Image (tube, rainbow, N blue to C red):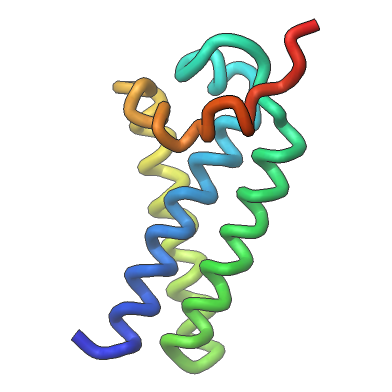
Length: 107
């Protein structure tokens, strides 16, 4: 396995985690996984940061035109995968909900 492959694997993992955090930042998806209210701003901020890091990994692995294409395909695949997980077995995303860090105030 060469460095380019490792960068792409890291990009895939980051994108999957990022899409999970963005989905969990929505109250309806959060309720499928945990009780209480999500800290939507925190989850969105770290989700978008992970998407940016995923893009950087793609650019590290390949030239610009191919990196953008791969990054968009990874994003689409990750979004579809998270959608399927949320519809079939949302409890599998509990480990990505970040526990008390991602829970909002309980007013």
